[in-house]
Length: 238
Image (tube, rainbow, N blue to C red; front, side, top):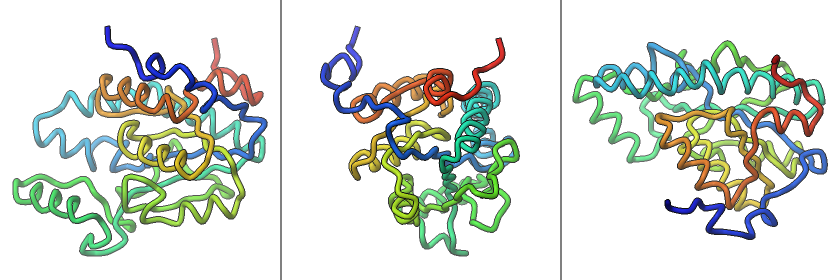
């Protein structure tokens, strides 16, 4: 059996372990927008048009049964503690999608030419809205981005400096895309990072496990229950 990244890097714990209560920490909810996390629009609609129903069946099921309930519990805990919550959305802020990468614009043109409804919303469209189950609270921060990582094409780095956090707790969609890209940039910018494994989702279980394994050298990985035990939040009902 091929060893995991953690097994290959025995000193990982010294780089990534930290106590959440010892840091100024924020909860980051990545791209839980309708285009990414809802049936009938965005990525789910396009995958079904392509006949790839198993992909949205998997990730929408994981979101509904696992990730969203856990994110809701984390939101409650962070808000009750007074710790900041930051949401990201992924949407173009231009009519012509000119603020997206050239590669993404090519993808959009290719999908449209094949007759598919492409998954990228503009910021003012319904697909860019955060899903109702995870609606932001009045004190939460919402930042739009136009790249995979929130450290590019957004005000995310500025907002982190404004609130003065040292550590980021990552949740959201998709684990091996925007969540991982933002986490790796956060690590490189000097933030302590924690990935809540059961508060994230992606297209397949193989992608999920591979992403968790990949980020292990750069982030502490924990479950929702373990994190809530640490910060004193409510556990799930038995």
